[in-house]
Amino acid sequence: MERKRRLAPSILAADFMHLQEQIDAAKAGGAEYLHFDVMDGVFVPAISFGMPVMKSVKKGCTLPLDVHLMITQPERYVTDFVRAGADILTVHYEAVKSHSRVLEEIRTWGVKAGLAISPETPAEEVKDLLAEIDQITVMTVRPGFGGQTYIPECIDKVRQIADWVDEKGYAVDIEVDGGVKHDNVDIFLNAGANVIVTGSAAFKGDVEQNVRIFLEKMEEKG
Ligand code: DX5
Ligand code: ZN
Image (cartoon, rainbow, N blue to C red; front, side, top):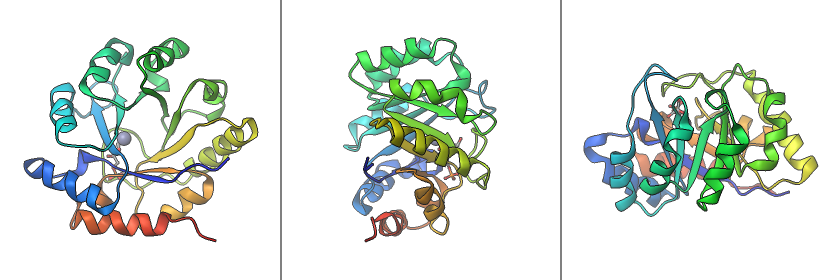
């Protein structure tokens, strides 16, 4: 099945004093999602931002919000993030006990359900859950910080998951998150990813131009 390629710039790397301008630039460059990284200081060491910031961003941004919850017990906050404006709400496999229950709850709200897996989690663990989600996020760095270098072993995981999704014909987007740059995005696309998260490579320097270059590289060839 053909999966539409989309770029999801992560505002974790944005200049928060100029957030509106930077989001507008990402949109002008052709970004189709805005990736929103929520960190609680427990599931990952860092703390980023949460619902109040999201509510403001939602007011000033027409792009769908691709919300990545790097928090423990995310099931406690599904309603809050839905209300704050999430269009895709992703929980971490490692942070949840009853996966089916939380994924179902997200979908009941009419929001796309996403599942993220950290580098140390084998792909097999999420295989059976692919039927219950709209997007899988393969972390290509350890979650918690922007600006890291991707872990090459994670590429096999993307390939494996893409094969399963294709075999079953699931309508599941395959997102990669962490260390994706202009000069390596091809590797992730070739492995089967279709949603590309990029933080530092989008927001450092000329945002519109950075996004445009990504999209040129992501255009389907042939
Ligand atoms: C890392 C976050 C990423 C991060 C990506 O835990 O989930 O979304 O912002 O940033 P870069 O592209 O700089 O690796
Ligand atoms: Zn993320």
